[in-house]
Length: 257
Length: 205
Image (cartoon, rainbow over all chains, first blue to last red; front, side, top):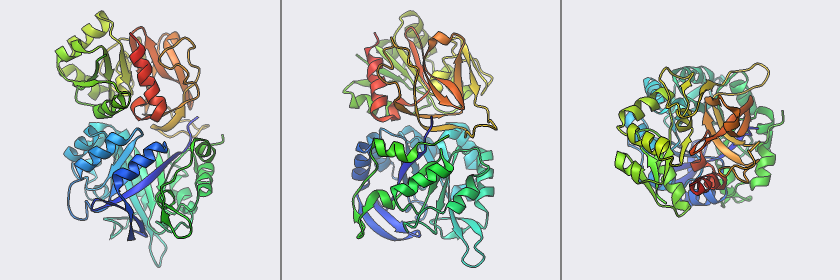
């Protein structure tokens, strides 16, 4: 039976691995290649790498780095950051990236999703939706460009549009819970997954392995991603890459029918 | 041993190159007819849609050489994901004719009201009911592999199904007819179990 997928999400900022809180307060975590090497040895289900400095600086993905990373990965690799045309997508797939994650272009160029899914198949097109609640009305909306721009659109509506255009998976990321280790926003996840029939990965707020189990039990099979808990450990948040072993992973992600 | 990874313009050829490198096995990414003749084993990768894959392989100028080496010289070939699906005759995904090396069709997952399944089938799933004599999946019963697909293969002859996986219903995960094999999952992205399938494939002569 299919179980939930458990994927570390790594952020790259100007070539260095970082971890954020609420999409800011970036803390240096280490070297991306080294981290991928370790995660490979830990048999992770999938790895998500987002270059948060690419679109912001209007630059293309770092193809050399990605090629080095993908040659290490013996599990699926999802890459996002600076993807705004078909050639870039083609190039990334040819470098050994399974899935490309598209953020900003999901909003300002949705045609790209349609064309890209025709070209490389829906299964390789992930749309990344960063979600925040507005400070006063608590209304949900999608943000882009590292949370700086507000699309003023509800994530569920955006997701449906993108799936209809050809996206194969939606990565829902909670900006409010990012890096806080306060637990996933289950209310949000429920509202986003209740009536959907496309693959979803949720990200933002993971507090512990048990918190992951909760999400899998309540919403699985589902993609579950996390940053902080896989790179930090202990009360002082020392950098220590970790991931559950095969037995523990099975316990956390097996879905009871 | 000389593994040729057929590059017809689609599919993640470098992932196979890296996986075989882990097995200390020399590979070549082949895009010319004579390179196919020089290979002892062939990998037929594939992502994307059935019709697009067929269109590209038909335009590649490799088809005569592939047919000759697979159907006449009986070289072992492993089709992966869409590369497995195009081995069949026809797909619900498109209108184009498949390679037809194995009789049968490729069907779409149906959304069901009773069981919640998402489409595509994406993630790690176990394979089971492995045919006991089979070399390709030897000792892999219950192992997990990475799947990513919206359509699945239905061979006319059930005996060709080497192992199955459960998604909504029991579907074909691995198919084999003589020197022609196909797997729906991605061995090149399935950690040690995937490498085992690839090394088993190399043992087929």
